[in-house]
Amino acid sequence: MDFLPPPQDDAPPMASPLAGVVAAFMPRLAEFAFDPGLVAAIDQHAAAVCDTLNADLFATPGSSEAAALAMPDIPPLPAQRTVAREDLSDYVLGFNDVLAEQGWQEPVGYDFATLRLTAICWLVREKDLLAF
Image (cartoon, rainbow, N blue to C red; front, side, top):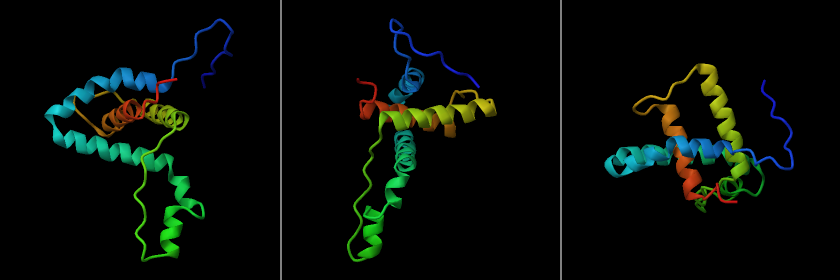
């Protein structure tokens, strides 16, 4: 397991894993203009990432799902696509670990991992998660 050295006062801040994803996958966002199906796939992957990161919200009493069960005649509110930078960074680190264990290589086209990483890049851009 790799351990990072402790930060020093004069050392630059460590790069976010989100910055690496953005650097690698931002050019793929330009393909949105040519492929509406790609936009739909990225949208679904972005929603899945947000759902994964916000899954604990639905398990707590008082959440919209719990309220919907208590009052079935009132439709639940649509889930918001909110994501925190720290949570998404942790997700990216874990996702990249799995890809590394599997020996994944970025393909020319799109596979599940490429779609997911492109969706993460899109979320970072849309939610302005690299701004400090």
